[in-house]
Length: 98
Image 1 (cartoon, one colour):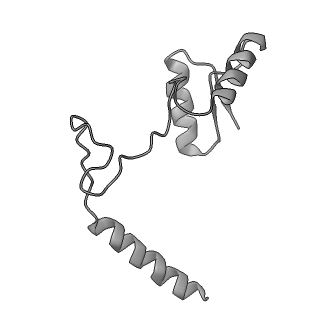
Image 2 (image 1 turned 60 degrees about the vertical axis):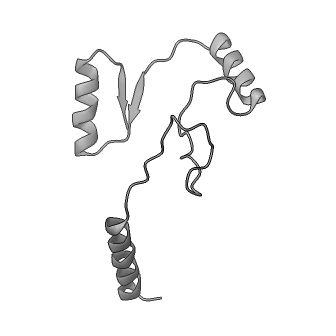
């Protein structure tokens, strides 16, 4: 596969992505699947009933046994990262920049 072929494939994928339509999931309907499409997966949760109970138990134990954290946020460098880090510091967060 050449670089040109990879470029054409990326361009085709980009065109397909731009032409796609957003899926609207109606949370008022009590069905897990609507029009043959399941709901989007939950990316971040703090619901202890969701996920693996052993993982939640370990996280809770670590939270009790651990020392306070030195930083609230860690940002991996870059120009935009520096600006975000500064904004978070101005809001009172302890920020580490890598």
